[in-house]
Image 1 (cartoon, one colour):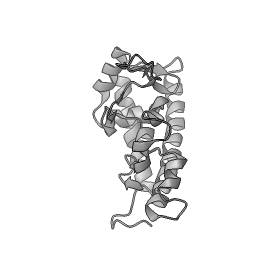
Image 2: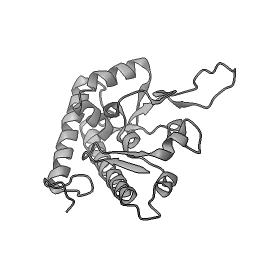
Image 3: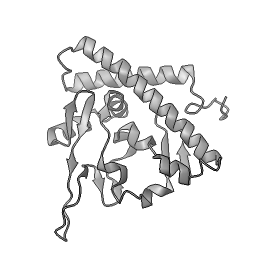
Length: 198
């Protein structure tokens, strides 16, 4: 079953298959996505600038070519086995950070198997709406990352300074992009004021 929490650029998708992932208990978290420019701006816009700097100081996040990279760690096991590495924020019960601290991909990504088992192939309305929202978010965040990358390179050709000023600039840029997306309309993410899709 697919469940969609429609909230514009903060939309979240859930699948019952995730709790019984055929890839194992770590699932997608074995290869965490990057926290890209638009993700950083989103996290900052939700009050997370200090948290990002703390995680960078701790080594959980580090600067990469398109934003921040998440540390992968091998959790300790009492049976002496060497488990495979996973996202540093993955714990025994799943993600250990709230949705507003995650890369957007972590909130909306569902694999094709989950969509298929969730009813997409049978034409289930919830699964179809979830797929539409998923694809719209992939496009939205992908385009925002390209636009932000160009602006960052123009302003800081040797790489951005990882400080409060830069993070708050990204937060403002994210807010600008999100407001533009909402005003231009994306029916699968931003329903009309009456709550219906146009």
